[in-house]
Image (tube, rainbow, N blue to C red; front, side, top):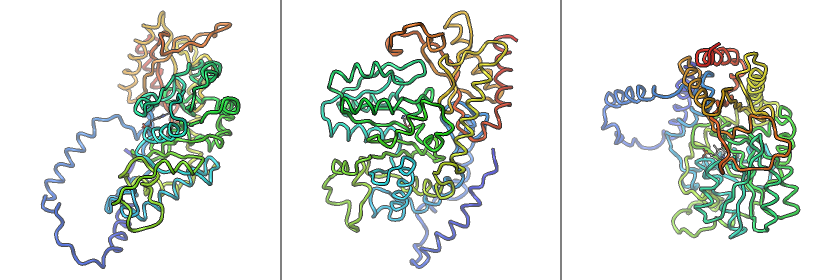
Length: 464
Ligand SMILES: *Cc1c(COP(=O)(O)O)cnc(C)c1O
């Protein structure tokens, strides 16, 4: 493990925090001191042993799922806030941390060029998407929600919870929403909202937001951008290829945006964020609870959030991280994203140029963000899926941790001359592929070592 900076960072700050409450009369022994420190220490040792049963998410050789270690300053700020354990439901629960949330969320909105907006943190991207679709349903009751079949699976589930009809739209060969299929649905005239994913979970695919916005002119619907994974890439549009760059440049015109600081924003779980372009949607959150807000006439975040209690510590950690690493193009945070993106392009190039011909990356082209997927060449899809499982396991014995994903077989084959759009979800043949999310800044420098382990594992499983 890297040297842990957090205990050192915490000691001075904890002292300072304690000093601010030093004028209070001594509270006597705290209830928890009834438990003796030795027992607690022993239990913690047990916890440490149990926690060893995890993949090493903090290490650059972990290149599988969307897992990125929180920044030391975020962990320290979160732990410091735990001394107080504020609740950002209301100012009564977290005066300082509510202010920090408002500031941190305004900085996130700044990524998208929004200054007048309504937004707050949530416990996850799923909850943030729920709020977006809930508001969408309030504005257009009974109208349908559309999203690509590669959109996050929770959109369909959220719509069911909200009792809104949801229709999946076919994806193209790069996992982006198929615009012809989308327009066919829009012509039916009963669509309230289109979910546009900028950075799909499987592939990091970027739906053509600019084209969807052009359809909004014609058909009139709400555009919700799910940037839970990919939202931060707005900071490095120069490093993206067209048409993904155009999609990101259009994001300012979305009606709502979700972005997950606990995915790419270096935060501990759970920290999601929802932003609405029109602040007046705050009216839907009005409630008349008689007991929650007594001490202040200022905005309480619980008045614009579906959740009641929320971790003030999550806001404190985010605020601290953004002080250290401001969310600006060209800054250190943005450079970190660019390193992951460069690593993904490097891995994709190596897969395509590999002389053994055993790798098949997506036929339609290079990754749009920092996620790489590839299939292994075999006589048939069953064998290919089986090889992927075996290479996945062989890599793990070399401490390289990848992920697996099921994708339509035809995405790896040359395009037929006129290929009608078909739903992968509806019976298209799937194949298990390898997948690597290269989201750590260190991944670029580690790519040689990742490649060595991958090719050695393939030699072992597939023969040289
Ligand atoms: C991860 C993800 C979600 C869900 O967010 P959670 O924070 O895991 O609840 C939604 N949409 C996309 C595109 C995601 O990648």
